[in-house]
Amino acid sequence: MPSYDVIIIGAGPGGYVLAIRAAQLGLKVACIEGRETLGGTCLNVGCIPSKALLHASHMYHEAEHNFAAMGLVGKTPSVDFTKMQEYKSGVVEQNTKGIDFLFKKNKVDRIKGWARITGKGEVTVGDKVLQAANIVIATGSTPASLKGVEVDEKIVVSSTGALALPKVPKTLVVIGAGVIGLEMGSVYRRLGSEVTVIEYLDQITPGMDGEICKTFQRSLKKQGFSFILGAAVQKVETRKTKAIVTYQNRKSGEETQLDADVVLVATGRVPFTDGLGLDEIGVKRNARGQIETDGWKTSVEGIWAIGDVIQGPMLAHKAEDEGVAVAECIAGQKGHVNYGIIPGVIYTTPEIASVGMTEEQLKEQGRAYKVGKFSFMGNARAKAVFQGEGFVKILADAKTDRILGCHLMGPSAGELIHEICVAMEFGAAAEDIARTCHAHPTFSEAVREAALACGLGAIHA
Ligand code: NAI
Image (cartoon, rainbow, N blue to C red; front, side, top):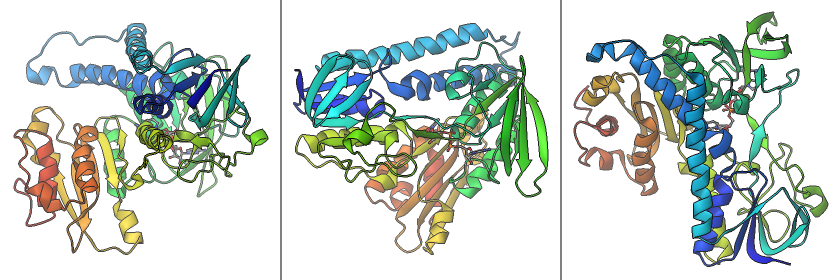
């Protein structure tokens, strides 16, 4: 019977990163994946394909709206959606094959099939039985279902179906104003769909800094999004080529119906643990179906869990960091993840990024803080590329000036946020960023200006 130091179940960003790091640390590693290709939801039907479609549709938007202003005149390109889908699939293929290459390079055994934990240190895949001192569950998550709504991946789709529509729908209703709803909504809005987002709460992207939520919503409205907030979707009925969405205003109780060519259900994701045999071996889960862990150890000795199947934000990079930490723990080192400094990014235009505490959280804690804000309208580079919308907001401790959080809306926000992440990891003050020379003209100058605004004041405001 093949025997390993570590068997990882699931080859998403958590599992494959763990496999590579564990192999680099000298451990004998196998990674079991049921999908044909490696990379999990992120590479196959999540982060990567959505970024390809966001890029293509953004280029189209630029051609439609900004090319003429730069003297690039002539016919605006039209959309060949089949070709765009091929481009997306090519991007996915390059990335998933990249993981195959990395597995070979690092001598990770890739095992195809759906795994079941069948005993202490024992995993069964089809008719193969494997043994390992350590088993890591990295099986990720799957779209949450919504009562009264049946997903057929044709008219009523999850994020998976939304990435593979045969044509651009004339009308799209998105249920849920979270990350998936707004990213995929942006793709189709830019390609010409009428997009209506129905959200249960009274604001979009709940949990994010309140000021960002409001400004972001205003920006999306300007792009042509319609929002129905404070509304609970009751049911979605499908006809031959259409869906009828019934929603209820949460305050008045009034029911309204809306037609759509396609309905995207984006109301969150749930841990995926089907078929693993967790009940039989006694791995404890909480009421939300997440595997309970302490230092990524489950309730059963020798079984670990990371990523979307455990608590915390369902983000690829959070899973990756946990993967590295568990590999280090198994190799006898000390693994560590700083859960206070995990950035979140929404890849719309403008892009949204945040890390650390929000103003609302600081108020709730009664913590004395100061705010340094700078608008991208004062950033020369942003204005030159039609992206002067948005701002950088740094929150720092009122007394010590230590950075507590940062919230960004604007060009390359998802890249800029990492300057703040590094600063926070080093326990930096806003003044440390303010006194660091930033190249001109870059978007990053806006971050420095926000840091300056935590002190004497920004220069270009
Ligand atoms: P989400 O949790 O971000 O948002 C779901 C939204 O649906 C919430 O605003 C919620 O209030 C709303 N909702 C729930 N039930 C509803 C109902 N009956 N009617 C109307 N609205 C309802 O979930 P989402 O967007 O599905 O994303 C799932 C996970 O995937 C998240 O954890 C997200 O962080 C992750 N993800 C991250 C991405 C990124 O980092 N850029 C991209 C895509 C997904």
